[in-house]
Image (cartoon, rainbow, N blue to C red; front, top):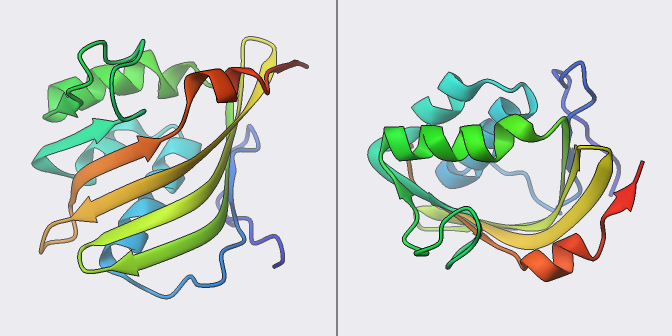
Amino acid sequence: MTDTREANASPAGSHVDWRAPSRAPHPARDAALRSYDAVCRKAKDAWLDLFAEDGWVEDPVGPSMFDPDGAGHHGRAARSSFWDTTIANVERFVFEITDSFAAGQECLNVGTIHSQLNGYRIATEGVFAYRVDGAGKLVSLRAFWEWDRAMATATRL
């Protein structure tokens, strides 16, 4: 597959590198792409607006330093706090998506999120699950990745 960087990549070089065999329109896949775009542009309000009122984020799924109870970040205020704790601190994102499976109201994207922060580059491999409601709003964003595995990739810039 060829590099299909988004035309509206952020000035910091954040972008989506779509390498999946399919980019066929699907409500959940479209929501995932809008999510990546908002993150790349650091457009917090646009990202928050992608979610249904009671939608939630689990990133990563289960207990973590971002979510000690592993219950997820439910509702706009909790998602906003998640953004401030995580996304806002990353200087650059590259969403490298190598496969994508859409069915029903969900889409699973397989890939690596390359992030740059505090003088380090980290490659987080994972499976990223998006579920939408009938209006195309995100009901859930669930990211399956492993902290130790991601941190093992950290390299100083």
